Amino acid sequence: MTRGTGLFISFEGIDGSGKSTQARLLAERLRGEGREVVLTREPGGSPGAEEIRALVLQGDPDRWSAETELLLFTAARRDHLERTIRPALARGATVICDRFADSTRMYQGLSRGDLRQAVDTLHELMIGVEPDRTILIDMDPAAALSRAKARATPEERFEDFGLGLQEKMRAGFLALAAEFAGRFRVIDGNRAPEAVAEDVRAALEARV
Ligand code: ADP
Ligand code: TYD
Image (cartoon, rainbow, N blue to C red; front, side, top):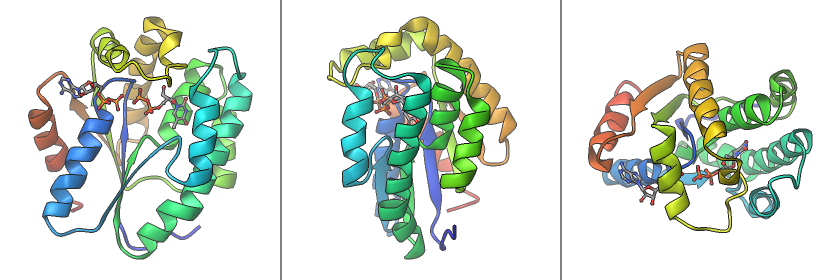
């Protein structure tokens, strides 16, 4: 699957770590520098994938098995890639994505089941693309969870798995950053949004 010439940046981290805030601040900053930016998110980012988003993020925590979730998230990602990400990269735009395949490696591959091998196999078969740069916003799990809970949206299926899951996820994301050290940059999210944003921009300096 060809990528085009645009730059592909993803944000990862536990729920409430500040990914969406930082993705938006970075998009505003790069647009201010005159770049075309496509700010998007997963699950979602295309009409079909947004429909799948409602299926996976709302309802009872036991609604889906980890295996079924893996298929739904991968289906959503394939549609997002075909309709939003690849066209944008092909015309040279910068794509900023709030979560991508690393979230599946973590949530379905590690936390909800021991499915990492299946996640990687399916990724290779159906997606085959990694971001050029992945920003991991590292956060204390208790603080991140209280931030996430304060939002009070209906999309709380994953937050309802609780603090234990958040702690496991934080450690898992740090291990993933070490595994893919070439594209990951880890940034301390326990600071004011503007301070975090400065580090995010600096982490892209060599690329943008
Ligand atoms: P995520 O996308 O990782 O779940 P959000 O960007 O949606 O995180 O942030 C979760 C909540 O915390 C939001 O209400 C947001 O306004 C707030 N928030 C984001 N970044 C910070 C920060 N650096 N300090 C304090 N609160 C923040
Ligand atoms: P998101 O809207 O980014 O939530 P938050 O802003 O709280 O971080 O993502 C929703 C949830 O979906 C989040 O708990 C992680 C989960 N998720 C997966 O389990 N697998 C995936 O592949 C993706 C992209 C997200």
